[in-house]
Image 1: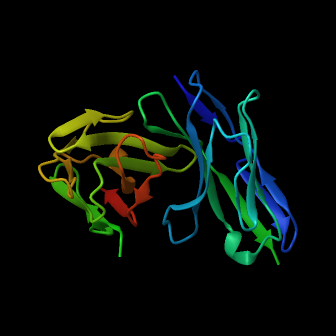
Image 2: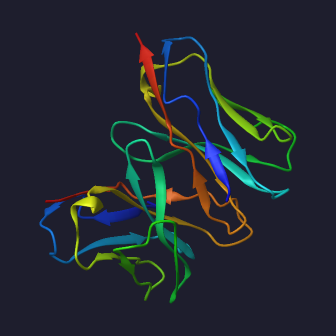
Image 3: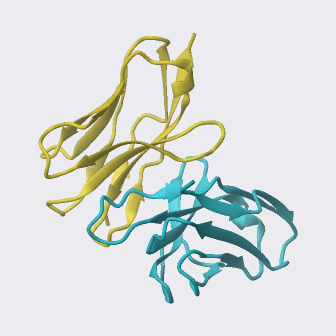
Length: 113
Length: 114
């Protein structure tokens, strides 16, 4: 079965600094999609960034970028210039062979003012 | 506004009392799904539907039922709720095959079964 692992249950970062959240996954597919979702205290699930595995270029959305290492099956999220509003749970997810999303357990990000 | 709606947002009930959580999307999405979220376990899929009248079990289907009679609606039914079904529930939808598979989520339903 495909799995997604987020090894950091909790991370903290000083406001305005950079933080990287890690995600590794297991898949036998050659082409697939990967996602990072954010869940703030409101509990709403919000898409942060999306990566297509066949694209070598790492996805970027403003202050959010990924480091996608296909061979290593690694998909980390970098948040630059951290802001208080970035405090949330972050979930990594991968589309499996049945086109379902497989989710990691999440990383709680704390922003220190 | 494109959205997924769920009702109710909060529900406290007693063991054995049947309940339904509604889910509706206005994006004409073919695919809809139900998840439950528990601390430390991420999101686990309960049931999903690839299209009208087509439903399939996810990872944790026991104790739940679904139906998909219309494209926009995908209700979750708990015939006889038990305390281990206390959780946060999310409905999600996405477009069909050939897309990015990005899922759009409802606001969540916090269910407590006593």
